[in-house]
Figure 1 (cartoon, rainbow, N blue to C red):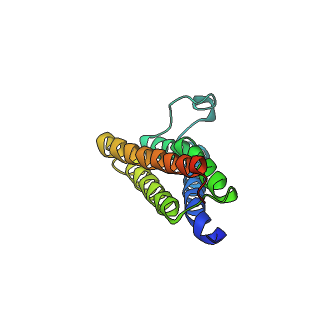
Figure 2: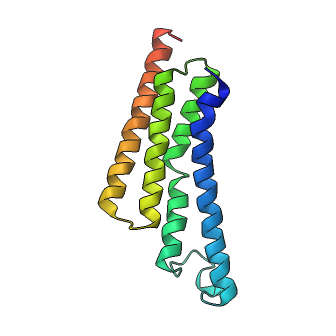
Length: 141
């Protein structure tokens, strides 16, 4: 399996994470420059940012949690020669749930829909790890 095929979903996940980081940063800088937010009111992570900014920043921070296990799984599976087409498909499905989760987070922020997407991503990632583990233990690959 080619490097590009395996790591394309990783690159999309990284792009999502960086995109949210830059977007949140630009929103924050703009609000501080305009005087709408005072640095003394947010310097110690106080929750004094407007809701739309908090949603973007929270969506970014969510990309630093569960996706960490995704990155590790893809790297280990690829470099141990246990990456399969099934795992690549699961990678894309996981990234799709993260994209949709982030979209909901920064728009409607509907908790139920966001939770179900998080849960779907968690289950997909768990299946990825279980299939990878099974492949390693059975000596396949």
